[in-house]
Every structure is written in C-alpha cells, then in structure tokens.
Length: 144
Image (cartoon, rainbow, N blue to C red):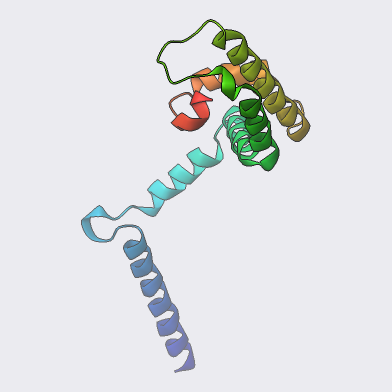
C-alpha cells in the first residue's frame, strides 16, 4: 500500500510538473517543446566570446556615462563654452574647434575608463565590433 501511494504521489508530481511546464511555456497548441528549449539554451550558451565581450563593453559604457564624474565632465565643458553659442540655426566656424575638443575629451575619458575596467580592452577592436552590432545597440549609446 505504501509503495502504491508513493508511486501515485510521484506520478501526480510528474503530472503537475508537466502541466506547470505547459502553462509556463505557452500551453495547449502553442506549447513550446522542452526539446526546443534545450536547443535554444544550447545556442545561447554557445554565443561567441566576441558577443560577450561586446556586451560587456556596452554595459561599461552605459555605466560610465551615467556616473557623476562623466556628468561633471560634460557640465564643466558646457559651462566653459556656452557663451559661444546663440539661438541662430547657423553653424558657425567657431563651433568646429569646440566640437572637436568636446569629442576628444569625452572619447579619451571613455576609452581610459574602459581600459581600466576591462583587461585587454582595445578601442580599435571594439570599433570593428560596434560596426557589426550597430543594429543591437540602443540609439542613445550609438549616437554618442
């Protein structure tokens, strides 16, 4: 009797688990087979080291641009040059060296931070990878 009760309980647990999996995975006609999930998990776990490295760099860039030090750098630059700009739609020649200084300042800062945070970081390799992943990066980060 005890073994039959245990067998029933085990069978009942398996049935509940299977039902839970069907519910969690879509249930009914749209149920995702476990086999498909295993294949998908295998594909995800085999994603390339290059993709993982790219994701790590993007994550670090997001962190860097949100930090107080980066915000202070931008604010200080703006305070230094805001009087040079007016409300006209004309792009004056005097804007070019200011723009170049801004780009140089921020690019150097971000690259320096990435080198400190990611062992073996190469901006040249990242630039190549960025071109390959440009559709995967959110607009704000890519526009920077």
